[in-house]
View 1 (spheres, rainbow, N blue to C red):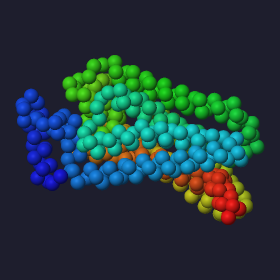
View 2 (cartoon, one colour):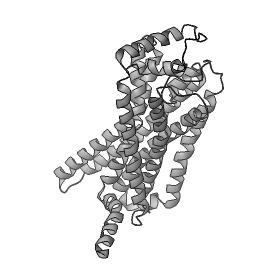
View 3 (tube, rainbow, N blue to C red):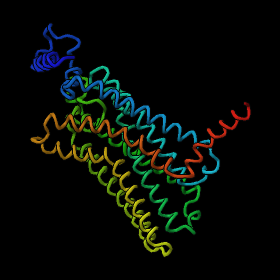
View 4 (cartoon, rainbow, N blue to C red):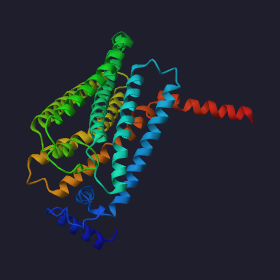
Length: 350
């Protein structure tokens, strides 16, 4: 699409919004969903690039998470370890997050239309919220598990029994699903304020859905307060766990310098990965603050936040298996073992 054609479409969409939707000149191409898409992503040249980026992120996430889950499932040596159980739960949350958000965004980009507010939109809102909360809590539990392993090594197996491990995994999903369900139910207590069945977005995230529902106050306040409290609690647990591990490393006697340097690098690395994991939530906090000041919420700013949120939701599932799986020597060996056995069988057959 040329720049002239984009300009003409923009003018026609502006005309369409001026109470002229019944005019016979309105074509199928210029329906409400197409015009809303054009208001979000007005530069047609950027659409193919965005499609490529989202497709690559989706394929990479599915491949690396699927490969990691397959390798860990085939390993009997690590199956009993609590850290592996939490890691599997993180992979499950990441896969759920990828298959929930990615198809919607890619389909909207290919069709150049925004998302219809229907059953799939409601499912995406519910499942996406639950998967994000589950990922956040799982990473927090992984940090707490490492703290117990490093600082209370003698009582590690006494504290983290299989019963408590299963209870922790159950509570993660109960909390995530309950929070997502309450938010979704509260959101639908009001009536839709927009006659059009399409939302102003490429995915059903809270801001766009609340805008479509007329910004109901109760679910918006509940989501923001509950989300901020959850984020703060997880951050405090994460900081406490790695701070205590770093303190233990500082108290090490032999060799002091080596242990101190390694501990500092480890803490900085995992804090950076936590920041990456929290990037979608931080963007949500920033967008919520932006919408509170309507004068600052320009269309360009809203567009940047929406596209950035859609992209950052797919980045952590791509990074987590590399950070928490392949970076560990034992897990790396467990993941590569099935392929090593396959290579050995091929050599034997030859």
